[in-house]
Length: 604
Picture 1 (cartoon, rainbow, N blue to C red):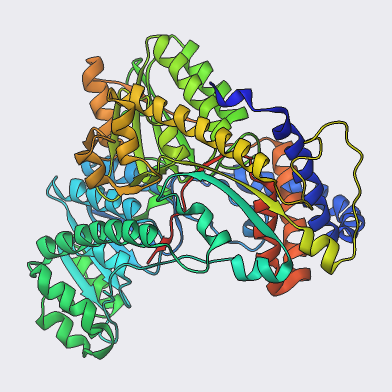
Picture 2 (cartoon, rainbow, N blue to C red):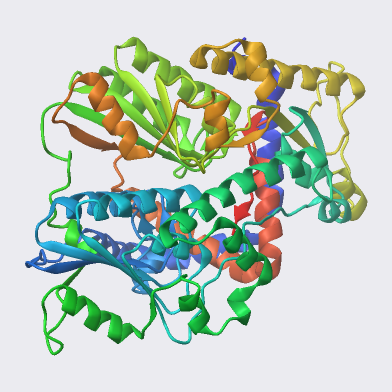
C-alpha cells in the first residue's frame, strides 16, 4: 500500500488544519489592511533589492603570495542563499555557506597565488557534521604544503575544533578556549498545552520516535534519553579525538579540561603551557606574522583575499571542466508537499524527473540535510529517485548534519550512501498527531459546535472532539501501514530483510559512525568523497558538477518573499514574547497527518 492512498478523512483533516490556522491567524488580521499601505513601498524598493542581489563588483585581482581569509562570524548554512530583504536594507551580508567554503578551499589548494589561509574565528554557528567537513577541507588544503593560521579573541568549542588543526594557533592574550562537551535541550510543550486547553492525540510506531514526546510528556522518556546520550557521546568522542591528534594532547586530559571548566579558571598563559594554543598574540601581531610568512615587510599591507572575492575569480575544480556531468541536488530543511522553503515535493519531484530525462547527466548525488517531515512527500521523492535509477542514472547520497526519518526515507534507495561520522541518521519511524482544542475553543473561549452527520464518523477528525477508541484504532492502523511501507523501502534499498530494518528502526537515531556498522550507510565520507566516488565508478577522469536547484529567484518570488518577511516582522513585534508559542502552535496545526520526522536537539 502506498501513502498516496490515504483515506478520505485525511483530506478532511487538511480542511480542519486550515480552520485551526485561520483561527490562530485571526490575531493578526488587522495587519492585512496595514500591508496595503506598504505594498507601494515594497514595489518601489523591490527593484533596488533585486539590483543589490544581482550587482557583481569588479573581480578582485589575486596577486602572488596572497592569503585566503576565511572569516567564521555567522551561521554556516548548507548552501549559499540570497540575502533577505531586511539583510539587504540593513547592509547585512547573510550567512556563510558550506558549499562555498569547500569549493574555495579546493581551488586554493591548487592555486599557486595562494600561499596560506587565515582562519579568523569570530563567533560562528554550525552543525557538528558541517564543522567536520570544513575540518576535512582544511586538512586537504594543508596537504598541498600550504599553511593555516588560526586566531580568535576567544575560541568557541566548535571553532576550536577547526582551529586545532592549524599550523599556527594564536589566541588573544585576554582570551580563552571553551571546551565543555556536548549537550542538547529539548523544549516540552505539554504544560503549556494543558493550560491552553489543547490535547495532542498521538499515534506512532517506534519506541525511540521522540518527536511526539514534547507534546505528551514533560521530560524525556528513558529510550529517548538513552539514544540521545549514545549519539552525543559518539559526536563528542569524534571531536575530542580530533583535537587530541591535532594538538598532541591526551583525550583524557581534554575531558578533564571540559569537566573542570578550566575555560573560566585558567590564566590565558595556561592554554599555551598545556599546548591548547601556540602563542598569545593580538590580532595585529598575527597579521604581522602572516606578512613574514609571505615575504612582506612590516610596513606593507598583507596581501589577502576574502572567500567571496576569491570565488569570483578562482578556478573551481570540476565546475566547467568537461562534458561528463554529475548533478548534485541540495535537499535541506523540512520535507513538505509544497512551499518555497525546505524540501517541497512539488518542486523537488519535477526537478529529479528532469534530471532523469537529461541525457547529458550521468548521475545524481543527493545532498541531504534534513530531520524529515511529511511521510507522503517523502514517498513522492523516493519514487522520483526510483525513476531516475530506472533511466540508467547512478544515484548516490551524501548526508550532512542530519538525514533522519524522512531524510533517510529519501536516501534509502541510493546505490551508495555516504555519511560523516557525526551525521545523525536513521530514525526510521512514523507518527501522526491530531490536536483536540475543545478545552480552548469551548471551555475557555465560549465557542460551541454542533454537528449534523450522515455516518458514524462523518465528523472525524474534529478539533473539538476527542477521538473514539474505534477511530484511534483505525488511525493507528494507518500509521502502522505507513511504517510497513517505510521499512519495506529501506529493506529494498539496503538489500536486507525488512525484519532486520525493523530491528534497527523503531525511530532510533544513530551517529554516522554507528550507522555504518549496522548497514544504514555504506561509507564514511563527505560530499566531495561522494562525487569523486561516483566519478570513479562512471570512469570519468574529467567531469562537470552541476548544482541543483537553481538558487536564483525571479522578481515575483522576491516580491512575494518581501511581503512575507514584512508581515512576519510585524507579527513578531505585535505578539512579542507570545510569538514563539503562536508560531509553534501554527506549525503543529499545519503538520501533515502522517509524519516521518526526527526530533534532533541543537547540539552545543
